[in-house]
Image (cartoon, rainbow, N blue to C red; front, side):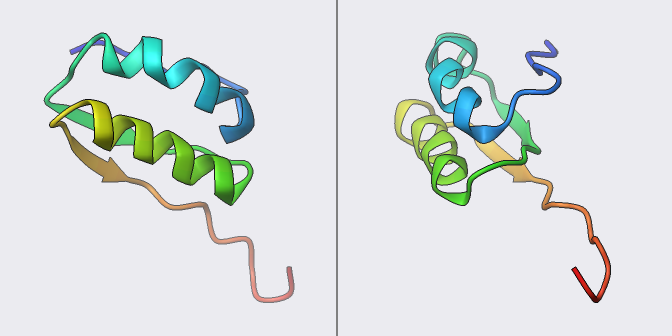
Length: 68
């Protein structure tokens, strides 16, 4: 197990680091929980799925309440 998380990075920045952090490591499982732009979120997920055969467990965003 290796923790490759980068605290404070939104999807807009993680889309630039995912190739080196995930694809070169070629893990069996990725636990994915990121915030930021939905378009960049999809880009991160696409890079993981297209360059590895890893399983991806996705943690969705936190519930912020009814009126947000």
